[in-house]
Length: 251
Image (tube, rainbow, N blue to C red; front, side):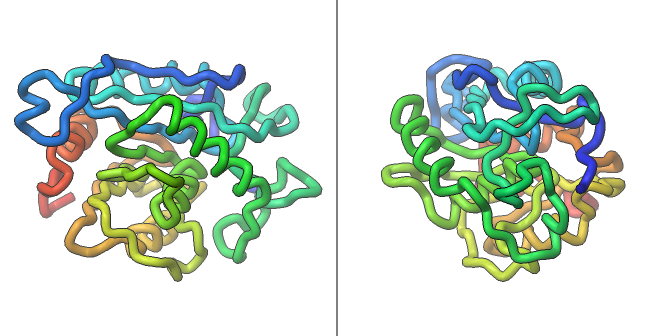
């Protein structure tokens, strides 16, 4: 079973099936719109064993610094995991399971071709969520949430069209990077010291996206969404103008 780090490294969802947001309802599609005060709306998918309380705490700085350009909406993953003793994770949630008999088992989740148990139900749930809470301009996925985002980008729910994707500490839905190319602009956030999802697997996910529309931002930390000034500035530039590279060549 793969350890998933300390509680401060988890992104989460609302344990009561509600969504959380940060920002206003106004929207915009370009840089000029952002300057006029319109905000884009981003669907944020938390990681394995996450919950909304952790999301609110962990991403507070990020969401606050991005409040002028976007509103992040966090749905609750519909699959409830058994209580996990490591890190005191009660109300742990997942977008899909790697083992239908032992829900907490993540053995081989990076290297073995997976059957994602429960994904069909999750996709229907996200379809309903997007119908009720959308439209969304972009999608932001962390860890298992990045895999869920990758699945949605390859096979979007009816009527859902994401214009950009931000994927942090993610790995491809098809191990080894054998997947249908995704053409939407993407920003990939990779930790150089991530031992949960090493950079090799994050690079495999990068390879699933069109080379002329993908951007890679590396940071020196591990399995986290970085919230340094440089990281937030990069994410902000990408959200405002997804078709312009926000990343300096040295990153």
